[in-house]
Length: 287
Image (cartoon, rainbow, N blue to C red; front, top):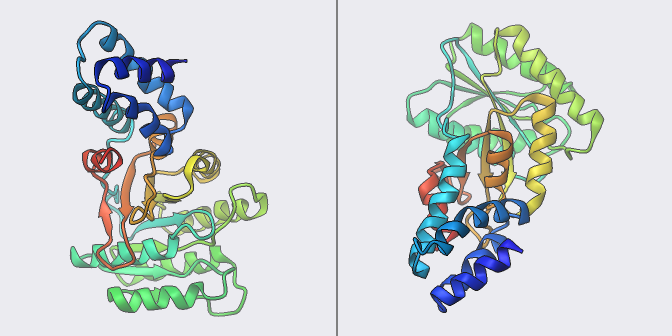
């Protein structure tokens, strides 16, 4: 097995450090497939004597991961285009941190002088609108909520984008209901939401950001596959990295789907949504 081979080779090179590298990838949720790819890429240099110590192997390992993250996922800035309002949809499974991420993103944009309108498109979860109203107050943003109980999410988002267009907002941030990626009917609703905003502003949404819980582990990849197939994900927000979660599986998502990570969530505060920096992320994984 290549993983075992590198561990044994590294053990001969550096007894204290080398044996930790492959397990470090697995413990950080990289998964066996991407771990084998990384390890096989380093094996030749180890055998050729180009990497002679544990520290050299570790540096080469970090460079390999960086290459995987940047080769297909280098567009980490929001792509908002020239039409106003730009529309950003936030999607993901229940409990991943969608609404919280949207609130933090609103705060970040407001600090940059952007006129932000929120849309409470999570019409399934009872407390979702109340939660988003609180985030609107905290970030100083305006918000559109459902006018009637059990309103269709697509209707709420359409109304919000219309208001954004009429009143000169720069960005409309659209919350959506959390859903399992295996729930067909709810995933169909996302398609309706995307079509609804596109009818108001041509080319909208500008971004469809998938929120991935950093504690999810290897389940990130099937989630990302399904959401991408349904609505076309343009970027990732990796949340809950303030605890023990390493979030290494996101490397597999970026490599397989070519979707860049745009932000990471490192806490519950307003300032705790940070732009993704690949080098800093890798340093944290191998800290």
